[in-house]
Image (tube, rainbow, N blue to C red; front, top):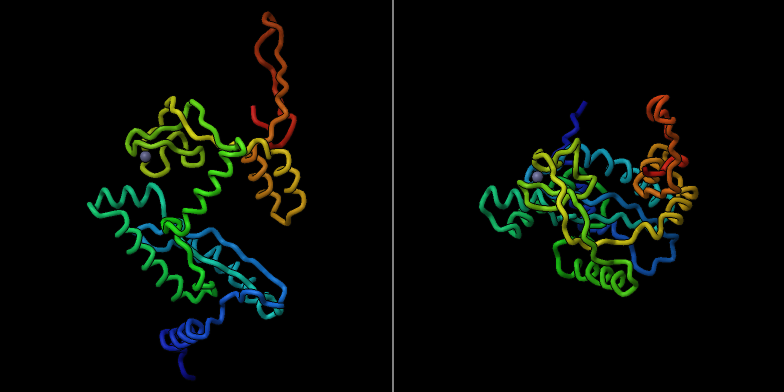
Length: 253
Ligand SMILES: [Zn+2]
């Protein structure tokens, strides 16, 4: 039996797909639309990690199936390329972040293509491209006009090593997710987005989507819709606090 020469065969088909635009979504197509979205990779210096192919393969299978079923599928890809890892890497290696980002995205692109994912590469985006971030700036201005973006002085998570504020999601066991330094609380004037105004709607709309229960719960906790908490105290001479309970699954104390 002839052995499967993956290097030759895969290269052949990947070139064919590229040349023919096999996976390009068509503008103004009469076919029904299907949009498959994965989280765009953060192009670090290390290249892809195993988590990327894991989630992209699942969505790739769905995208290919949908195309075979006659859908005009948009399966986009791009680079979520702003942020701390690039900054740290650039400082560490003494390179311009722009050069580092270009080098990293080139590596990631080559790796993703060699796996053969059916992304629409003609629509590749990069969050560091002015043509892209002018729209994030535009959205911010709409928030500002509607009073949904505002400044407030609040205590934030602060990494003394990276000298930057961190989101709650970037703090793991009280330490900076990036560098492991214990995180401090600092009073800082911050831009805030009033997403809590949408808590009710976001929470309710989760009932309408087909997500796994644990994903829905994680989303609900993140939305953090709160109806307050009920706390019961025992009288002082009898003892201490006996119980508290949360009235809703997503409630925050
Ligand atoms: Zn840090």
